[in-house]
Image (cartoon, rainbow, N blue to C red; front, side, top):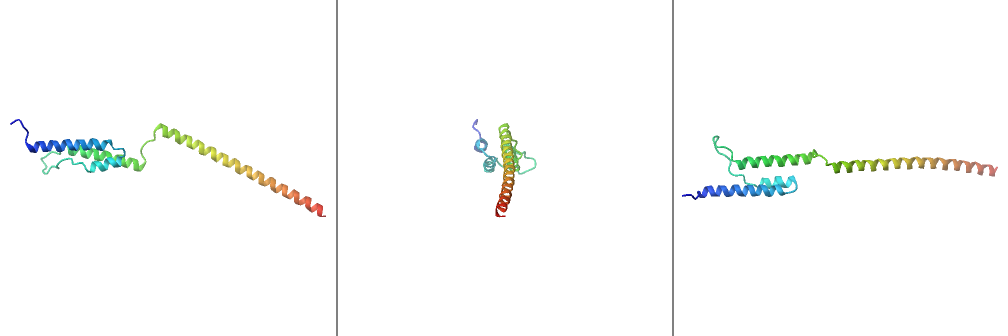
Length: 134
């Protein structure tokens, strides 16, 4: 008489399988994979009457689903905060880009200067040729 009813054993094994699946889903790397794995978990039956309370597995399933959805939303909308290493590399990248822009401006000024002196030399040579022809 101390042996539990087969229905109770089936319910316990379903709960254990659900929790195993939940743990496996948490091990996945991306939040999209977690959400997809969470979709396939069977949290147990939904209450059919108002007096019945929602099973804990169903509550856990809904909470996990909400967390995965929130993580995906954060990733999609870019609200995930940068780590200090990422911030540092962004600052370094900005410095490199600024340095390249400064170099390009210097080169442009130098090219203008060279173009002006070429123009002056050409005009001087033109005047010398005119004087020689006279």
